Structures are given as C-alpha cells and as structure tokens.
Image 1 (cartoon, rainbow, N blue to C red):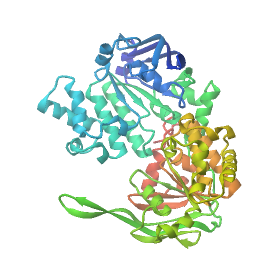
Image 2 (image 1 turned 90 degrees about the horizontal axis):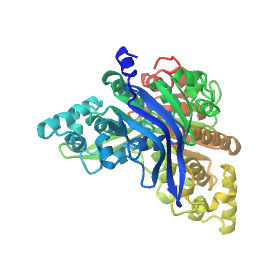
Image 3 (image 1 turned 135 degrees about the vertical axis):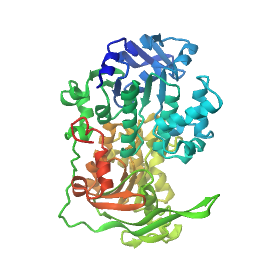
Image 4 (image 1 turned 180 degrees about the vertical axis):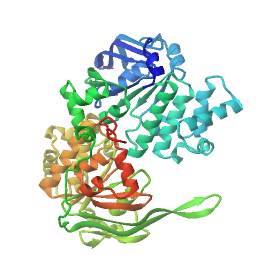
Length: 553
C-alpha cells in the first residue's frame, strides 16, 4: 500500500452506507433484501462484498447508484457517495453521479453491451457526456480501450460485441466504466464466467487502476478466493445482513462466523492453503476399459473472408482422448481452445473432418442421425446454464419425462414413477414435480437438468461447465451429487471446465487443451502436481486464492 493511498483514506470515505434497509415489493408487502447495512469505501480502496445469491450483494450496489428495479425500495438508512445522499435522491441527482463519479461493470458482458452498435460508438456515448466531440472524442475512445487492456484498439473500436471473446467484451465494459473518469468503479461479478487466466488478467488490471490512479473499487463476488486475492477489505453478507468484515488475512485465518468458514471450505485454494489437492490419485493403476474414445479427431470450419475468400479455421487438430468407464475425464483450457467443439463431436452434433469417435466400442462418428439415435441413449448432455436449460413452460415432471416421451418409453404412469425416482436420486423432494423453472434456484434447476439427463439410464454424462454459473457453496453441492451418482450408478463423465480447482475435486484424468490441441494429459494428480507444459503451469498459477495464502501467482 502506497503512502499516498494511506493519506487519502484518512479523509471522509468516498462511500458511506449507514443502517441501510432495502426491500422489494411483492404482493403489496415489502420483502427485506438488505437489513441494517453499514459499509464504507475509502478513496483508492478495494472493498469486496462476498456471499451467495440472495445475500444482498447486488441489491446493495444497485441501491447506492439508484438502479434498483421498479419494485425496489430503500426503506431506511443512508447511502452517501462523494458527499451526495443517494437514498431517496431524485433521478437528476443520480444521473449526475453515474459515469462521472461511479462507473458500473455489469456481470454479463453480452447483456451489458448493445449488440447492434460498434464498440467505439458505445464508449463514445459516455465520452460525449463529458462534452467532448469529434476527433477528441475518438482519441479518448482509443485511449480508454488501451487503458482497459484491449489489444489493437483501432480494430476493436470498429467491431461488434459478438466479434470479441468473453475476456475482450469484459475489458470493453471496463473501458466504458473508465470513460466517465469515475472515482468509484462497481464491478458486479466481473469475471465469474471467464477462464481462470483471463480472470487473472482482468483483475490484475482493475487492481492496477486502483493502485495507480486512486480509483476505488467495490467488487461484488461469490468467490471468497477472488476477494482474498484482491481486496483491502472483505464484507461477508448472508440473507441481506453483514455477518463479518475484516482484512483478507483475518477473514482467511481467523473467521468468526460459521458462514464465512463455509465460504472458505467452498474455495479449495483457500481451504487447502493455496494448493490444489486432487481428490483422486490413479497414478500407477490400470485404467478401466474406455467407454468413449476420440482418435486423431480434427475439425475445420469454413470461413468466408471478404478479402481472402473462403478459407478454413482449424478448431481441432489431431485430438485424442479417452474416458475410462466409471471415472471422470476432464477437458480444461481457455475459451476458444476447442473444448466445446470436442464435446459436440463426441455427442454427434458435429461431424469431424477427420478421425474417429467410438462409444461403447461402436463407431459413432460417420453415422447418420437415424443410426446414431440408439446410441444417444447411452450418452446424455448436461448444459452450462441451468437458467437456459429448462423450458420455462414445462413443469419439472414434464422436463424430466421429455426424453422418455421422445424415445417412446413407458406409459404416463411409469414415466411419473420414473420422475419421482430421479428426483430422489438428485436429492429433491417429490413436491417439486409440479413446479416451474421460475420457482427453482440455480442449484435446484441444475439438479433437475441432471435428473433429466439420467432419465434414459445412460452410461455416460457429458457435462459442459455444469457449475460455472453457480455460487461456490452450490457448486460444492452439485459436485458432491455428481460424485455420489457416479459411485452409486457407475456413471462415466466427460467433464468440460475452465476451473482447475473444480476439476481437481471431481476428475480422475484430464486433457489440457490449447488452440485446438491436447498439450498435456494424464492422471489429474500427476498433471496438476507436476505439470510439464508451460500452458498447464500458467493455468495452475492463475487459480485465485494463491496470493492470499502467500503462494506466488
């Protein structure tokens, strides 16, 4: 911490929240969401609010800048930002604060950006609010893209959001937040959907802004490891209340509340003193017969380039993987490395350009849809996003029995019985059968998605980032469920993830992918403790929580 930063923190805090109560009007009753919150953010300070969904983190941030939804109400307390009382303030007052005093980085870069406008135009909107026009505004657009760590700002300014990776889109949101030259940036889960290496680069950059330019940061996150790495102060919230506050070392080493201890235990890199400890060690053991093999699989997608005509993009090059029966094989790597393409080819949703896929010893690739259909019962998919997985009009029982109906299995009575059996397997009560997805939490939806995937009695589940959209505590519950199902039912898993700490908890073997190739594979206990490839080492070093424990990151 620099002396200059210390001197800034002796004056009045930039943000001072006192006794704040916030609720949402439902059925003419105000349901509390934040209760009696006291919180300060000093000039140049990084404060992290940590807790699971529903803890009041985002509600607090939205209340501070007047962005509560229509049914949101501040019912008591004060929220002063840069000397201005925002609780109960008029819209004109709040607009004067937004952008120029407070910048917001929303969680989802695809909903935070306008898909119909070029990147440069979206940043220019904020720059023009400060009175700049023409060449001066364009120069600042490029300057803020550069300050946000966006490569080739001139090119990126001309592109649309869909043409950028997740990491670049998140950096564009940072540039938009910076364009108002704010004193405070509120970052709402800014890296929850990003790969671990991209997450590290984004958080490094935000930390540098706080250190070098005196910008305060209020980071909203469910990941205590991220907070412990980055924050000067951590505020832990549960059920709308602040349950603990302190510096990272105190929160990590001497937590006072059981809930904080739960969060630490849900962050393996903190719970295991900054080291990844694989759950399974199959080194030296004879591997079971594979249930799925992909041999020298390559995939080239045609691209129409206006300048160079049609050309090919090599998404996969000579990829070979094997999923042992009754075990979990993981695919890890950054976005764009080929994980999802590999999964789609394994499922028969894409045809390989070359190479072969064998499922249960039978060739799966090269078959027609009709020929593949009987084999599809043996392998089922669990998607990444539990909120997009289920048809919002279907009840739980309709979602679970849909595969049975599709394959013409059983009658109405037997399908209902199967649905009750499956709900029991995923630890949900029978009373949930008539609920709609909107009545379920994220973790409950993912349990229903797993139950549906199990309906046909498959031997193999392919899981595409199945816990990345969930809070840390819920992640642990779903991983425990998957491990229990594997033990009881003898299931095999092909598990796609960018989170190596998650992979360490569930996988026996792993393939590390980079730019369409497998760069390292083997038992997780070997690859994670003795990585041979520089890219694998980079992935491991980027795992959050290592700084908080003193391990070099």
